[in-house]
Image 1 (cartoon, rainbow, N blue to C red):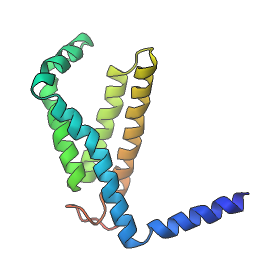
Image 2 (image 1 turned 45 degrees about the vertical axis):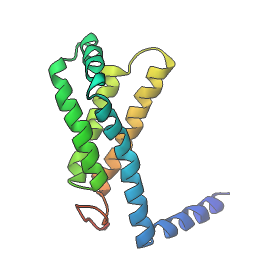
Image 3 (image 1 turned 120 degrees about the vertical axis):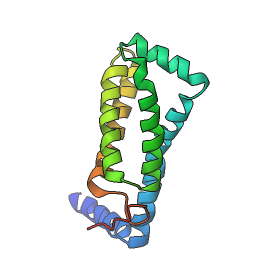
Image 4 (image 1 turned 30 degrees about the vertical axis):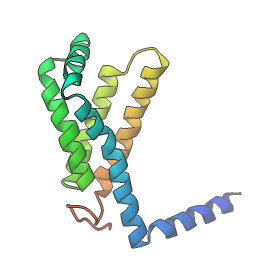
Length: 145
């Protein structure tokens, strides 16, 4: 049975190690990972600003941090999308995700638990970008070792 898994893993590795395939998958991963930050940051502008400010204040987080959160989400999301300073930005966003999980998603209900784990999963993916970079189809233009 383990031989089957070795064969499947080997086939997947062979496929994704083709330069065009690997480069494309990294771009797709950056698009997918950046979407939540861009949408969340944009949603906090305008009408969403006051609601987010109130939610932060209800949990003891200073409202003065909200502009920084928006800047990180939109700026970091754009940077990740374009592959600019990817390792630094991915690390900052990973720290942000873990911090937000502990500050905003420790409630006892199931949705808070899911959001807590979502933040941890996102941080895990972002740490992979921290290690491996944005790939060659990026502003960073990093080729994999």
